[in-house]
Amino acid sequence: MNGFLIDLDGTLYRGHEPIPHAASFIRWLQQHRMPYLLVTNNSSRTPEQVSGHLHELGIEVPAAAVYTSSQAAAQYLTEQRGGSRVHMVGEAGLRIALEASGFAINGTTTPDYVVQGIDRSFSYEKLTEAVRHLKAGATYVLTNPDRMLPSDGGLMPGAGSLAASITAASGVEPVVIGKPSPIIMAYAIERLGLPAADVWVIGDNVHTDIRGGAVAGCRTALVLTGVATADNVHEQLASAGVTPDLVCDDLAHFIAQFSALDRS
Image (spheres, rainbow, N blue to C red):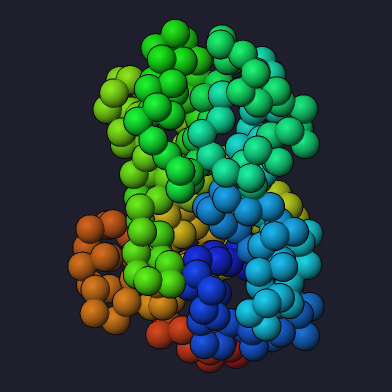
């Protein structure tokens, strides 16, 4: 049996716009009882919020089938047992995941960790505070390295762009949780309950989705509906230095190619 780890931004939707064939692709998985998990580097939303957003777009996915970089960051910190005090730079999805795992958020001048995700109210003050904590010895954990994200009006800076400024100022490199890190990939594969060789990773970003899948030993499919497009795919593949098993115009094209492989 095959399982699927599927990206969200740029794969199922762009901001508030569903990507064509996304809803029918999810229905295809559900009708064939194929195990799947939506794995997103976006740390801003909870699984329930992601499920609600998808519902508004006509894509029906339960919250239990969503796994975010915020959840993975909280799971990682829990396993480290290096303290419970966190200085957070991020939004509601990250805060809720950390609090649900028992971490105290932004309540101390001596945190054990600086945990950073996407923060659309990022400021010079937040940069300064994070850098001071890191200089004082806090461990830096980054939910995801994405420098750019697809949105309604085009690409926008992601968590990785904020991390670049924090790293430049502090001199501290973060522990990266999200794709292409093996940390989130191992957690997600474990949740599916399948061997990595039986798992397909589907996404629009060669540097995160495809590289993460390849490093984890999964099969990979690049869809040209987000960061990678028909116009830039060759440049994207060359810069990433990885080759997906399939390159698909969209998710309907993936179903056709996957079905042909399954019959062969």
